[in-house]
Length: 80
Image (cartoon, rainbow, N blue to C red; front, top):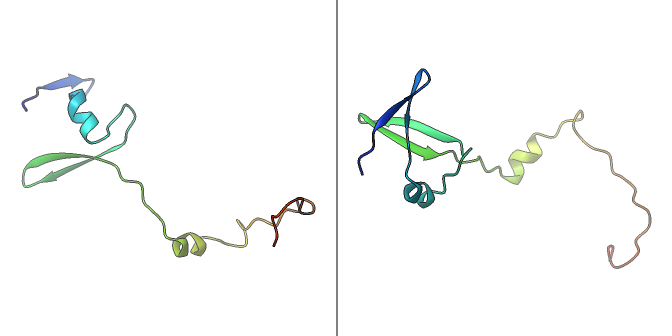
């Protein structure tokens, strides 16, 4: 597909046709990563980092550890 670069303020912009945006799940506000590989511009949706349980637990410190909160006695089968 051929598209045209447009001026947008002090930057340049490329319009992404709807059928291409849908194909890679781009919507307004989606963060993207711009890469240059072998002289080609590559546009990719930004992937959110997925943390392992171990990585999350390593981030717990005495300063951000929450106390246990008492919610009263069990009223059903919450505790076996």
